[in-house]
Image (cartoon, rainbow, N blue to C red; front, side, top):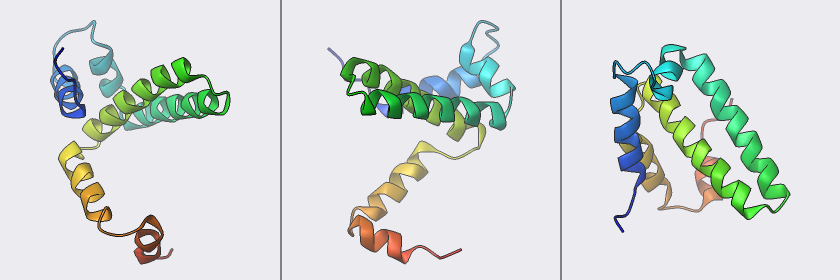
Length: 107
């Protein structure tokens, strides 16, 4: 079985976002704009959180997949690359989470 990666999903999202396929959910979502894409991401994140609290492993697995998909859609419509996000994560691995949070500018 071939390993499926976030890079694979990101490439699929990018291709479908630009496609002419009127049956593509990704295309439809992207065409509705960033606000709708962000709304869907938020809905899926809440559903994932509820599944986690309910300790429903199967539901959480499905909702986590939805969160990852919708996050990639939001990144795509916002012109933020997965490569940039992964680079940011890589920068953060050199320090503890508390150190990283403390280094952020305060509002």
